[in-house]
Length: 141
Image 1 (tube, one colour):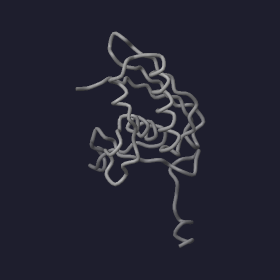
Image 2 (cartoon, one colour):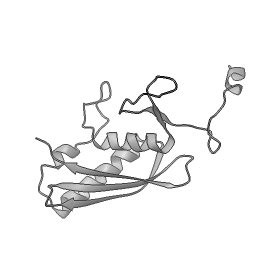
Image 3 (cartoon, one colour):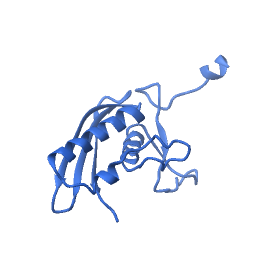
Image 4 (cartoon, one colour):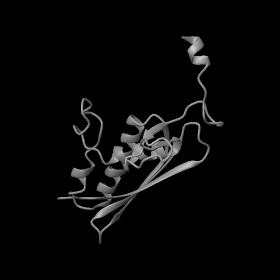
């Protein structure tokens, strides 16, 4: 087994781990005719975006993964609710995304559009620059 591990090669020059994920746009790789993959920071950004859009019981066999953010969007837009949404996102990322180290979650209510602008800053393991994910949370009926 150790001999097999020693023959493995890494495509990256900066890290020992490469984070890979499928591109959910399902675009085709022109050379291999397979689905394109996304790597490193883009993969973690996609994972964070998926986490904040997932409710409890939506992920098969893992009902604990997710948050109750969609239900919170139907509450009144108050400073307290803004704080609760911020803390919920922080807890979600700290508990279920081990590849990133959270720096800051900033939520800003946007009253005209009935939603919240969310900006999440974090560092990805083995990646030197901070990564920012921006999203708009709005309620859907």
